[in-house]
Image (cartoon, rainbow, N blue to C red; front, top):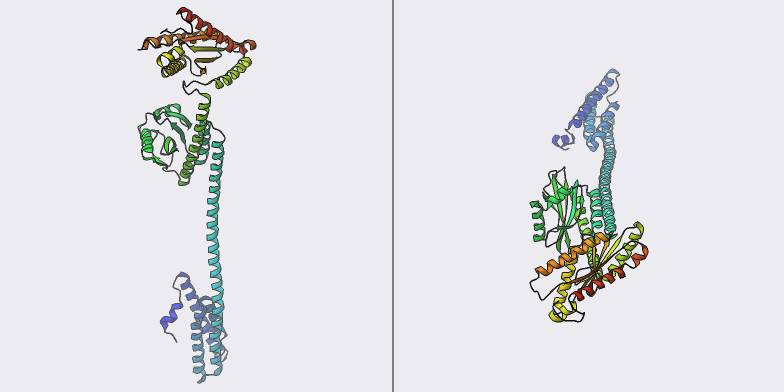
Amino acid sequence: MPGWESMLKFIDWDKEGKYRLFILGAILVVSVLLVVWVNIYYGIDIVYSHFFYIPIIIAGMWYHRKAVWVAALLGMFHIIAGYVLNGVIVSSTLIRAAMFIIIAFVVGVISEKKDKFYDELKISEQKLQQQYSGLEGQHKDLRQKEDELSVLFEAAQLVNSTLNIRQVLESVVDLAQKVVGFDAGGIQLFDRDTREAVYQAIYNYSPDQIANLKHCQPFRDLLENFDKDLIIESVEGRFTCSLLSKIEMAVPMIINSDIYGVWFVENHTGDHFATDRKKILVTLASLTSSAVKNAWLYERTMFVATVDQLTGLYNRQYFDHVLEMEKEKARLIQAPLSLIMVDVNRLKYINDTFGHEMGDHILKESAALLKRSVRKGELVFRYGGDEMVIILADSNYRETSKVVKRIKANIQAWNLANIDKNVFLHLSIGWCTAKKADSLEKLVAAADEEMYRDKAEYYKSHGLTRETKGPR
């Protein structure tokens, strides 16, 4: 038989194991005393030892096959007691001792399988719980990914729903604020040469704060670093000189491998931006850059389609479109509409004498002079050849005459400042103001007629005919 050291290995010395050992020991002592008392008091032979089954079964339930040690101990006690009382070893005591061991083994095996089954069941339950936790985490991640994809899909719809750059920027900033949850921020697109903002969309910034960005050195340094190192990822720091921000993040706006702007956001609490929020902002910045590129291409196409390439004035096709719109508006609100027709005098003489390059120069100078003479929002067009026209919406005769006076004053100033006195700039001017429907339809013809009358007076005053050559 194994030694006592091996036998004691079955004992679990933790708190519960000590309780079990104490209880089993107490039951063993009580069982032995009961067997002895019954046999002595009632005169029953020591073979009567049914009380021993109680500790054997309990040991089998608690210690599995190791309960055989308890059964062997009680069987040994049973055999020795029978020998002491009878002087011989009775066969029935040997059979009873063998039964102790068999019962202990059977109960131990059954209990071991039962406990093993419950352990496996518990392990399976733990695995299922882990799998459930994993699936729950995956479900949460999938929901988050779904939300992100939904945001990006909505952003893609927004940026592709319009070719107006300002609308694109405002829509995306509004969407990003709802998703990323920044306290303040916005997008600024810059002219690459001047670094001045040409488009912007802002959330929760005052006009003064935006105006101060151009004087904020960290912000200017940020743009320089973006441009110099061609950074394409988001960066965190303090950029906007904002007194409220605790943490700020900036994402470059890249178009055709060049930095054309920056997306900057700030939080007034916390110390960092979540990684997934950063990714969304970077993705939105990429989407916005693509949308801005498309809008710029559209604006460029529209510019080429509506602007005369030599003078930079709007062309005749666009004039016809705008004039019809302004006439309709004038009819609806009963407001005056004025038109100024302008013709460059002696352009053929300049072309023949100094070359077409000088003629083009005079045309461009005339266009620039007219644009300087009108207010913001008043449009100047190249009507055709050497003729130009100005549309003045909601401008009466008196107000239009002031514009004409500014044009004439600017012509005089140009000629005085001109060094080459052989080259001159003279414009024939005619204008007309209309309000009623019939006069609106005749507006162009009336202004044109006045312009030719002025041209005739110019030639007459200089003693020239249209074909006469000479400096004036």
